[in-house]
Length: 275
Image (cartoon, rainbow, N blue to C red; front, side, top):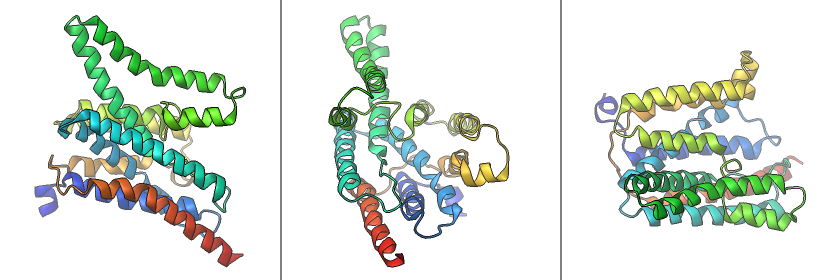
């Protein structure tokens, strides 16, 4: 088959990730309003690993890392602001919150990759001044995580909201530290399908252990804690042929927030119709 011969380029992987993500978000937005099959959530587990994989690839291919990192940062801030507005003035009928912001996770992945490499190279060159600056930048998100958690009960809500909007923190972004580690791991395995495959299988095993509590009942594995089914992304990752494919960068940056708010509007219409 041509698929196995030619593989999948970056655009095709991102398009598949977008489709899987949309199914997952349909299930989330319409939950409690209409019945949505569990497989919507299951195939949604494939999405994030593909997007994160392509972000790691982007760090190899981009001509300007600074612009790439800043683009993700400002997308993260913009998404956080829109989420806050939606949750305040147009909340989900089911009572849930829109907390999706993969841009924040991607920003931290690229930040840690870039300044992690800076730290290693500057210390190898014995440039301890630049190395110390790189180390400080790497530590700031973790320090702020500690501050936010320790002062969560005492800081005014708007201050916490401002910090969490403007400065993504590793434990509080979508997917948390696990997805950041996933992105860095993909970056380090780049160019080797064998290394990528082994790393990803190990990562999924760890995820399985952390999310299922080793409860091997079918209900738990396929209805409650389905995150481990991200292993289904492995064949697609291994089909990546290293080619970029079509650009359409802006399409993906716009579609991600736009589809969430369109689904939010549709959920209100469905809720009104059913009630």
